[in-house]
Amino acid sequence: MVKLSIVLVAMNNMDKNNINSTIYSIKNQTFQDFEILCSESVMDYVNIEKMLCNNKIKFITTLEDDSNIYLTRSLKQSNGKYIYFMRIGDEFSNTTILSNLIKQLEKNNSQLIQYKKTNNKEDYPKNYREDLINIHNASMFYESVFLRDYLINSLDFEQIKNIPYYELILLTDITLNIENYIFTNKKITSTDTEEKIEEITDITEYLTVISQITKKLLENNKTEYIDLLSQNLQEINFNKIKITAEDELIPIKENMTNINRLISKEDNALAYYYFNKYFRCIIDVLYNNIHEFDISISIIIPTYNVENYIHDCINSILNQEMDDIEIICVDDLSTDSTRDVLNYYSQKHSNIRCFHMKEKHGSGGCRNYGLKQAKGKYIYFMDSDDWIDPNSLKNIYEMAQTNKTQILMFKNLNYMSEHHEFDKGNYFVMEHLTYYLNRLFSIDDIKRNDLFRFNVVPWNKLYLKSFLDNIHVKFVENLIHQDEPFFYETMVHADRIYFIDEYYYNYRKRDTSITQLANKVELGTIQIIEYMLLVFIKNSIYSIYKKKLLKKLFEIFCSKYNFINEEFKEEYFIKSKKMINKFRNEYKMDEDLNNYLTGLHKKFYESIMLSEDYQTFKNNYQKK
Image (cartoon, rainbow, N blue to C red; front, side, top):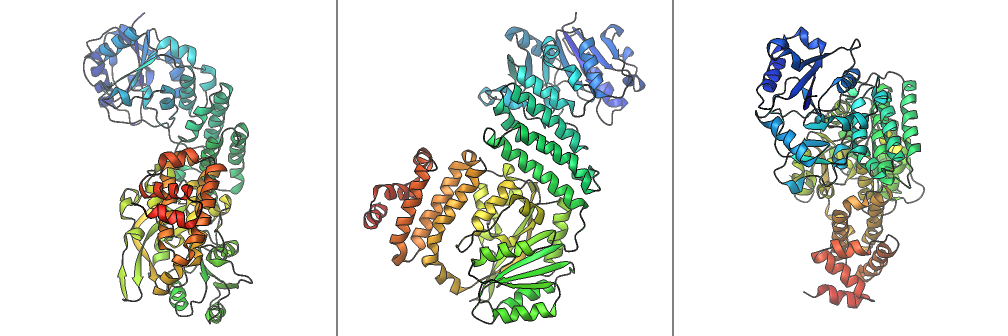
């Protein structure tokens, strides 16, 4: 029996040179108590016998071209106490690395030693299983030395035979059985490659394996690992998925249903959220790839008393280089000539449809109504006093198509009506978010604080309609700032967001809007704050974002109180106190409010809690 079995694993683009470099790297080790196992196919590239003694070489015969079978046969035919899987093309980091690894394993009587990229042992995971369950990364196989008996006893060979994505099953088995492990800060090989689990080409097969893993974790009462699993599902290259008809989506949906049956929304709320976000993205992309749309973009415009501006808005859309668009105008009981202007355009242009609300619903209600009427593949919301630049729609449509986005966002310019000049404005430019420019991301890729720096307005975003329909999202009606809950609801459900570093929209800032804000309608902000909170609570991610979320919510509490006219401040205090008590009691947030609020936000909160009437609050809040 030898001390170590080295199993050579063939990689793509294998050639004579990288095989030679790997073999010589093994030969030069000071530690020599090993055997090498490799596939017979390697002999077609190089004569290994000339490099090492024959008694160190063992060829594994596999009639089938199946990496699963090669792996299981290598394990069963190996004779080493320890086993190391080495990618052909890799080289050991130094000549003593094997000797040091084996010494550490034997000294600690460990089942596994793995390289971790850190010089600080305190940075190592406290629970190795949490690291293993990151199933999108296969590098652990190639930067780890295992106790052979541990692998033999842990892995279900029959289960992994002849199934795709077998690495995922292996990772799960290892996760469930590992007990004694150690880390090393010495890199085993000199490669910087982070090997990924093989690319997903059959979603049905992949979801079947995920279902098996989920079931196995549940059977072993590892529900916390299901949460981790759900957050580390494999990215899919949709360009390589061959789906051509809607009936081909049926088995995919069935697999998704099976997984949802295994986990309950009540018992596995976080995993349920992540799985469904992932599933929704798959269906969104595949459905929109194969479905034919007569209309590419539906532009929804809520209107109210904009007779002086609606011409610029509609004409800027009509001048776009796109014919397959529709314009949906929803008027909210205008008292000027806006309705007549809309009727004129709808009679002149067949792609313009105008609707007139019978009761007041606010811009949010108008957008909801327009969304029901829309027939386009994508949805774009505009405000009726703004306009877009030429070719804007064509550019954002092509970008959304290329990247298969659920949300595509871009920048805008402010037009200062009083001075007749443009201004970029920090909020709309989102200058602190350059990291996210020109790339695909989801909420999980966004830093906690950055999430609350994004511009929440709907008119700098192009939405995939099926995505909005599937998450059943709506704007809050008859309240100011109704775009905030809508924004966060869409962000927490999207898996494919793209941020373009371009200016396509012109936002008209009117002096009249400033005086309108500082009045009684701002009292509705308090209800909006609750709607924002509920987005995170109902999706079971409040605990993840609570520190930054509470900061954001109380930033709104404070800013609106300072901004609102004096005549409404007392009512604002009463409503705020009632809402904050609801936070404490109904939503059980008392401890979080005490722990996470700081500075002015904490002062506002404490002043509210210590005051029974407005005058007392005013005195407490104004104290330095």
